[in-house]
Length: 99
Image 1 (cartoon, rainbow, N blue to C red):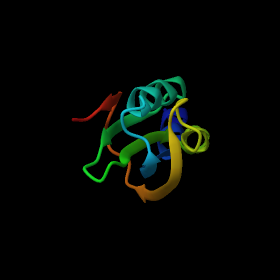
Image 2 (image 1 turned 30 degrees about the vertical axis):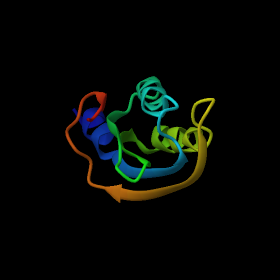
Image 3 (image 1 turned 135 degrees about the vertical axis):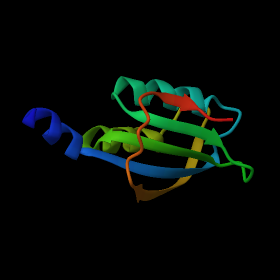
Image 4 (image 1 turned 60 degrees about the vertical axis):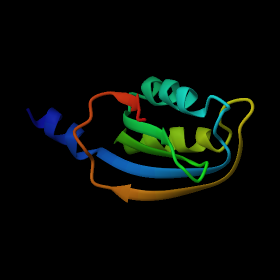
């Protein structure tokens, strides 16, 4: 049981706001694949100001790897800025696209 508790303590959450040319380029689907590859849960969605918002929940090392990849994004994306905000981890168990 101790191992499980130690694992849960490493669970972190970071909210991202990704701006630039990030809509209509497959950014949300790309981020779903990246997050699942790194065993993260949470969500991603388009925002009315043409940015993309995401919540990454999981091990902080995996979160940091995905954030690094977000600066590149999918092939046709042009990321200008990523704003991060630490959040309390939620109870999500999958990574989904929110509409």
